[in-house]
Length: 390
Image (cartoon, rainbow, N blue to C red; front, side):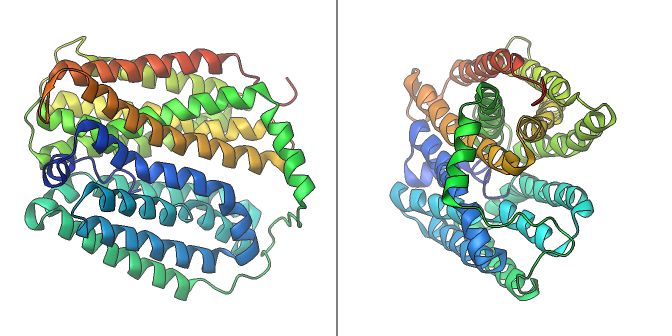
């Protein structure tokens, strides 16, 4: 989670040192998400075949090599390659962790442990805010990434040493081996279901708009237009992660308390998320750090309801192919981060600007694009089926 949004508070330094435009800066930020998204397709079979211990160790070390390359890069090309390697390496972490939980823990502990895993991971977003800004100011962004690579190597080796040999599940459900025909049969069922595409659309724009703000463009706006320091900007952006961490368990609990309400809770939360983007468009005057902090907390809080899109997709299909549906929803989520972060950069670069200085209207129009695309995806999502039985 740290690597996903790590370009946010140091974007001006990267742009200056590597002579980047807004378009190339957006492509650089999106490179992580492109490689991460496409690695989701083979990740499941690799984890099943080789086990999480081997796969996660190799991939995490690959991600560390990307951090080293990014920190040492002297041009856009090598920084781009570094971001790609980070995305490839980190693509194993969440799915690999879930695989570990299914192997070594009984099924009735999976949801609790998975929720804890995601909550702890959110701390990475906080570390990529003001702490990274402070560290980059102290030693430079290159040194900060070299140290991030060292920490990643240590974590990868520690995981390899601590994880037990990948044995049979302890009281977990045995999924059995699946044939190639089983895979394609499941794929046809999922891809022929219109509601899957409606959920995928909401997932694409929900995370794409959020991570574009968190990982790059809102931070640049706060520093470039509002004149906030990198550390103050990091403090504000950290509230996105705080709101997301607080809101997620609440949305999940509400959906659990009222069976059949998953889509309604997700729809309500994402509608409020869309509305919380409106103040960024300049409709009302927002200038103080406190006001931006409150807005960021609300954006993160309501955005977290989108996690229920996984559960909604699961409810649409038989249990034996629900995992396929959820993993492909995850692909839409990461693809949204890749595409929208880059497209917003192209859009901002297209509008009138002087060198690397962009007018406030350029940022605000891009935030309007986020609002409109999110609103359109919600209209599409509103007509999806609630469950398989509907």
